[in-house]
Amino acid sequence: MNKNESLSVFVVGKGGREHALVHALAQSPLVGKLWCANGNPGIAATKLTTGRLVYCPTIEEHGELLATAVRERMDLTIFGGEEHLMAGLGDAFRIHGLNVFGPGYRGANLEGSKMYAQRFAERHGLPFAVGECFVSNMHDAFEYAESLDYRCVVKASGPCLGKGVKVCHNVSEVEEALRLMIVDRKFGTAGQNIVIQELLEGQELSLHILSDGVNWRLLPIAQDHKRLLGDNLGDMTGGMGTYSPHPTITTSDLEKIAAEIMPKFLEGCRRDSIVFQGVLFFGLMVTADGVKILEINVRFGDPEAQAILPRIKTDMVELLLATATGRLAEVPLEVYEDLATVNVVMVSAGYPGNYNKGFQITGIESAEKILGIKVYHAGTAIERGVLVTNGGRVLSVCSCARDLKTAHERAYHAVELIKFSGAYYRRDIGRQVRKATYDGYTPQLAPYRLQHE
Figure 1 (cartoon, rainbow, N blue to C red):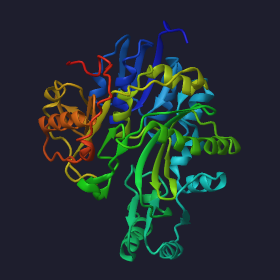
Figure 2 (cartoon, one colour):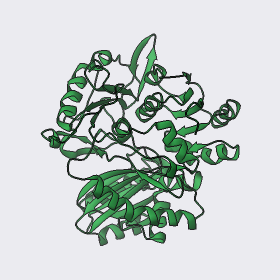
Figure 3 (cartoon, rainbow, N blue to C red):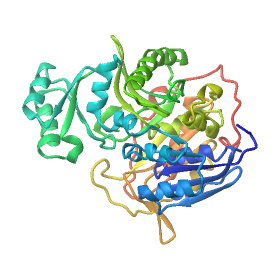
């Protein structure tokens, strides 16, 4: 790639993950124009190192997204969320000669259908959690749960924004989960077909891997916190916070895990005629019997992306474009080994259930004056010139520092400065590692990430 080349990059999406992507892409000198469709007020306020941001909040219809990309001759399109990929926009854009970071419909179905993912894993020998698929069949599903002594995980097969998972330990919890999904249709058509998996014990990890269909690159690890309440209690959510790196899982450990998974995954894609050019986000459980895959996602995690992207040293545009064009082997992946991140998600009262919107948000400017703090917008909007809440997950408050202890302290200092009615956040994100020390760090921190130092 010509380093002086000026590229048009298109990001589609409106959450905290997309804000983190836009922020990372905006640092690249390769960008002439950075377009964002849907977006949010935080994305709209992004300043580019070079070039300019073109903010298109009203473009949401699939045909209009494609027409815009073709008309403006986008050099790279990045779909932040899975919904556009599951609708086949990756295929549609590629048919028109556009470079897309993200799989086509067949690859996206690995996330869009947990039944498809379970069967893909069985066909190709991936170390998936043992499970069975059920098509709207309450009786057979209950019998299978009984064979697991009712210690199981019941999952809606379709997309439910991270909420269609019920962890069960006894017969009453199984009955409730099946009733909610199959009888009450709490998750609509997404829950009519379900997967029941064995309940695994161990350490849960989130693993992100770039793949251009042949080659792959391991991204930094991020430890997610899915439960609403502290100490991993309460309802499942889309994610309440993350930190990176992991205090005990080394890069060498991760490389061994990825080396067990990726050859089988890529061979399975080849046999199933899937060209996967994007990011794989594996949910894993490290058990006494080895590593097991809990789920496959086909986009960056949210809130994992907010913790991972600041730790990537390689130019983000160059890295994602190489992934989208089958040239990943040409681009070395460099990581800031001396940088730690803690990301705390602030949510609306009532999330992941019903919640109110429209409450004024204050304190972000003060929070971002703290060294290494970046606040990513998710569920926000501007009403009458005022920033207000507009979703369940409202903000991601991400702290970058030289060690996890410092990142943890600064993140919660920043969170305490941000106010909106009904604001809730977990108080234990990274708590277990806040005393961790990294005496071996030799700080070489990017100036835009610690701009107040």
